[in-house]
Image (cartoon, rainbow, N blue to C red):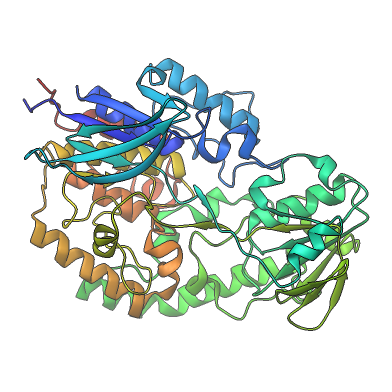
Length: 495
């Protein structure tokens, strides 16, 4: 038995729902705060751009105890994901724990002599403060817009031009009859470019800095989940804490691994026509693979082939009249500029002295299991472990975090053990796998199995899902399989 605690969950997206459910099921007193008017996070309808759909198939993008509906497509659209999250909240009675339209302004250590944190909250009735024994930050990595501007932007807007963040492109009519220029090379950028083409834009330019490997939903006719989401594939990347025996094996199979990735690159070049469009990346795919590896938007390369989307390497330099001048000197006529430049990482409501304990000089986060920092007691993070299995990742970390808080992990780490692990992981990201530094080092991809294995082992569950070793090596991580493991972990309840 453990003591019942007062727990605050900040955020009402996928991670917030997972956290509320995990802490609630363990008998704690949970209050959750979401600044929007509805659940859903990035899937909340007012934040979703038209035709947005998941990057992951629906059986990878669901909670362990509730599959996506059978009539959903393989890659559900935004409104379908939002409806799924709402139904999940209703099923488990999560809504009663949330205060919507409530913003967390500040978070400071309690001053009443007790452990925990004081949250300063703001809603329609004003400001108030509440004390909590533990805080789960579930704001994820896509809550604060990255806002940028360029010289001449104000005059461009005054002349009738529009400049918006990608999350503000919510109505296809915004593109109709307009010259649209999209800045960015992510999936959101290509999604918006294709949507603009399909909704009557007179011209569409996509401006991006670097060529990156893009993976289509079907690679050579095969659903990519059967090719990329496998232990056998994951083991070919340079992971962390490789044993001496593992290094020997890697040396032996290195030629086969090299051939495997060169074959994949060749297939992608041919299937997508990367060379024709000048989009062949300079970096080998095995060194680049991370959460920044975008999935190909359906219709994107077809639009390139038809000349309906014009790619431009570089970035915006400045606005002049109704044109945007690029860093390479090109001038592009524009009525609408969509800045698909991502989101800011951070925990802005945390005191500066605590943020310094959390974030390194180069932006890398000091977090153990992508969930806790030993120098910031009584708090943790859910949804900071970005991956292509977002829902499953959040659920596993939420279950790990409540056990960590209660001291009920089968392998409960000490502060020194966590610090030592953090230092090793920082070294690995900086020296051995620079691609792992993306998103502040909070990206679990392409090491989904490795990350999940560590979480499950800490919780006292098995890490192998199937008795057949071939099926285990070549099967993708279905969410229900992990639900069985969560159910098998040592059970306890709060008083």
